[in-house]
Length: 428
Image (cartoon, rainbow, N blue to C red; front, side, top):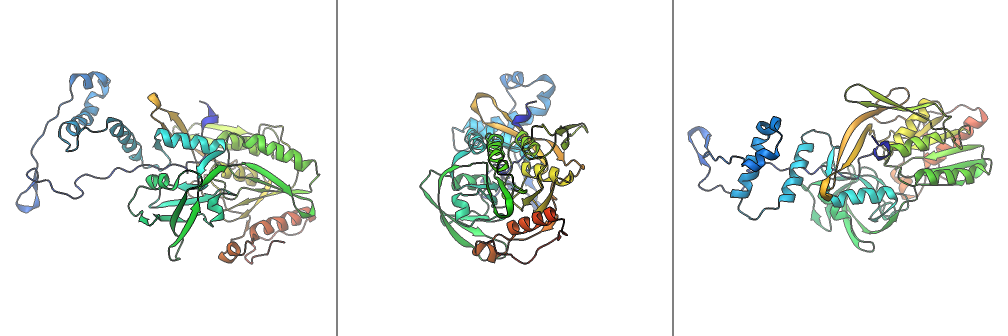
């Protein structure tokens, strides 16, 4: 199995839900009420033909007979003919995967699969946000740093309840996501519901999103700051280049910022954590449904395995970024600063389907930290708890970054480390 294809975060695309039948309308002459409220439905038999039977493996013919009966009934009796066989096929796959009850196992049509690959390669067109389509409304997991979504002030947890004035209540979040996408230069107005606040409109000009997945700079007091925004095709190369530049300046300590990092490739996460952990250290376990597990260890050749460091996390830190943060925390390599992370502890493997019909993304395993913690639905708890308030956002303050600086300075000087910093500290 090619582990490079495994995706640690399934936040880009959701599951298309299939609506139930008889949800309104008239069934004149074909649905007759009987005394007591029962209903008499005329028996209609649509037996699978020989071609359908022969196309189904012998051991599955009895199981699939109702499927072919339903398929034939649609083709024979549905009012609007001809029906779209491709749409029926894709809907059947969607329904099958949705029945598993796992929001991270889903079907991606060709367009969705192309967009997934584009986002992880570092370029696509849209507003620039990782989103969750498994909720009632399309929900922001995290805006991409430097994106139109971030500039417009979108935050983790924001729900899109309308687009260009059109109510999205009851609309499949995956369809909502497609409406949010669009060519660079076009404008979309999103109506946002944020917590208990009244809904408000945000006008965003879409852009070509070019994601530099790793970058950094030197701060005061000899502290190196490194930000990793996703785990894609170029992350390891960009991170190594960033570390080479910063380590050449002999920093005393390092801050790794994983806030609003929605994840990406599992292999990239292993390569990233290997830059900070000596070779051979266990960085995660991958546990399969049959009870077996794979153990992942640091790959070696890390450029920053000894430097004191802390890691910034928040509610938008998900999956692959939680793998990195969880490993560094469990191994005693770094303190975590911020708030509880998203809590995505499963691994998906996308498999390309035949005839250019998209891909199926299936949850194949749960992952655990080196101390065998399963963080799915729980998240990582920071060592130093620091929230971002409404005033912080409005005044462009970053108390979490300031807390990371103060914590790192305390580590360097051997001073006590507080467990929380509830009062916002203005960034110099």
